[in-house]
Amino acid sequence: MNDRNIPITEDELHAYVDGELPAERRADVEAWLAAHPDDAERVQSWRDMAEMLHARYDSVAQEPVPVRLELERLERRPRQWLYGAAAAVLVAFVAGGTAGWIAHGAANSPSTFQSFTADALDAHRLYVVEVRHPVEVGGNERDHLQAWLTRRCGWTVFAPNLEASGLKLVGGRLLPGPNGPASFLMYEGASGERYTIYTAKTENGATQMRYAKTDKDGALFWAERGVGYVVSGGGDRDRLTKVAQAVYDQAEKNGT
Image 1 (cartoon, rainbow, N blue to C red):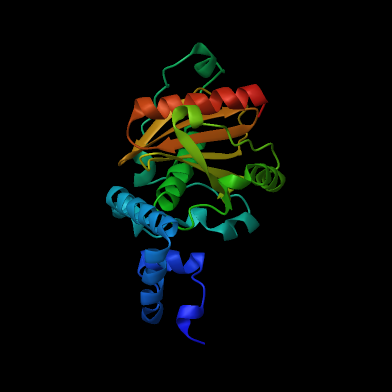
Image 2 (cartoon, rainbow, N blue to C red):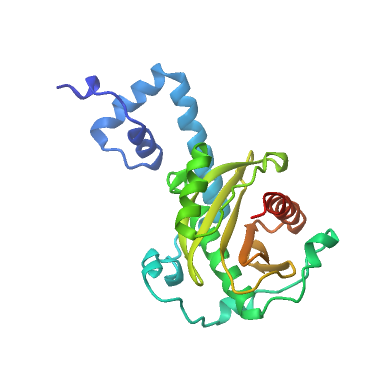
């Protein structure tokens, strides 16, 4: 059969953008795109997104996966944390905002704060650079995503609606956490900016909100009802605080 008679698949379009398409199919894909402007527009949007992500995150894209984020850790005993240079660069603050945010009792122990923010920022830096596979379950399956993560994690995982903050749900995935599974949700703005929400079980009931920063990324951590939250994003702390407040407010409203 002539290759030109074989329909162009979604995977081939992605491979074309990534430069991984076999040479014998390249001309067929280009002919297809010339005849299908909607697909050509999608392909161009993927290219634009890839270029933006490379420009923003190339400094970390080639970093190895941190050992603590390997999925095999879900089958192991909870780890004993060791802190080195990475933990040393995490600077804690009480986040500004409404009294309801910060009046939740004593501050969390530094080790819990450091473990959560270190894991969350590692996961954020690892997955925000992904164009094709940033998540396991897409945002178009919000109900399934929430049910799946809730079942695997053991607490109610809620994917907040952040459209008022200009962010759309990309989707989520399951990760290892300090004491078992962790949920990881990703959101994306119109300009390609990405924010992530990392949640995992913690022994602490409720804490103040605290800020951490490493390189170009920042994170806000808090705990409520035995679950720790970390919202991570770019270096604009005011923007990050507004996103985290929206997450906090919706989590409180939903009792999660």
